[in-house]
Length: 211
Image (tube, rainbow, N blue to C red; front, side, top):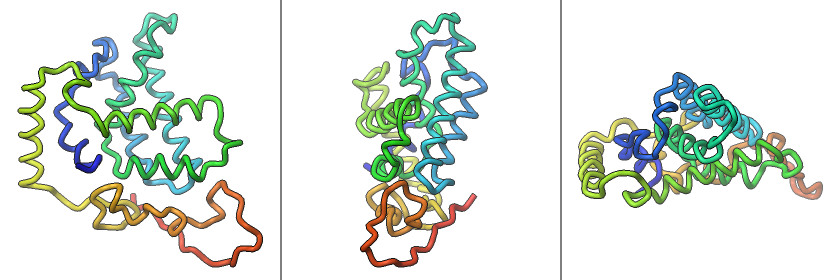
């Protein structure tokens, strides 16, 4: 099952299933964080995508700081479950392709400190969602199976519009995303990589993300 499809089916998951402390649940900043990461496909360059991850992570730390005990205790343990929950509810398409794109084309000299840490956590969240099952959550396995199958049947009976990004239709998974080969769709000048001076120069049209 493609990750985008799996996240759609997993929308029955609640904060309690991630053992997110009640004090953090349904904080207003959850919506801001969800909207921030949901728009990761609205930007083109690796740096802009990293900034989406960075701002999402800062909003989560705002939740932890405002509702926590003030001394930072437990924040490290609470951060990743909240990030996973935010990403799940945002359902941004082509998560794995975005992580691969950022990792491959972001200049290593410009990816350090907090941004590198948050990108690593974001990649971990994507990996978790790719492999999540009842054993990874605080939920009865039979209840998980019942809810999962019900959501999947509902989705299969009414799949809705074809997912797309950048105005391109027909994308239903990371593996079938027409933007998979990023170098074919992004101007080389936008990528933080050094171009071979001996390479033949060619014009590559930019892809405009629809909003």
